[in-house]
Image (cartoon, rainbow, N blue to C red):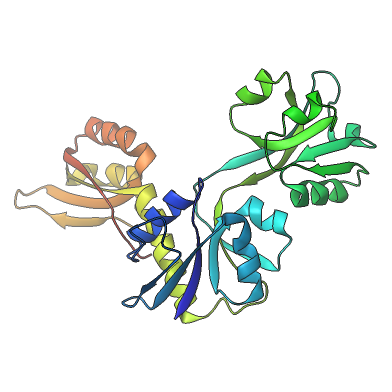
Length: 282
């Protein structure tokens, strides 16, 4: 039975459970449940603190985990990313009082406060910068005001909270994070159960990215239409009862669907429909 770690709370928890449900896996009904068994799919789920998941997976006691790339790197655990999941995206940046720092080279000899000591220490070491790192569990933007540090490193979304604290970001991003699937470093990723799990999640990712588009067009416009909707391999084309017309079906990127429908209409396509894709295998 495959043993999988899932975040039990925070920004990773809800989207991870939703994706697993879409992939056909049973999920817990109450937040108090720490472990459930899905006998049909031969999977056992363990609901753990997101920061601990990489540690459990690296120990080999759990086969796979869903966590954040930031949490994996910060843990320093012997686990590796095997699939990115596209949600819980965030960017890590340095910030300081305006005019006090412009690039990472300005951090030499200074103190940096952060909740992600592992990420920041590694980044500074990789860049050859000798700076001190102070670990704080939260509200790092107050560290400069209280004299604990001269610079902070934190997740930045809009930058509003930093500006409210009188700070500004500088330099290149430290890293970009998102939800990922991890496996113990060196573990056999060709395990059939692991591969099946990954295929299911990849199917959900594709289903969320594409829609199915159907339309009718005249034969003489088919090549132009197919140029607009090439599909993943090639579209399905079927003759209609009315001579000279064909029905076309193809997967198209969801974010471009409206534009493609407009273009198809302009070349004479009609009865243009899009439908959501709930699951797929490529």
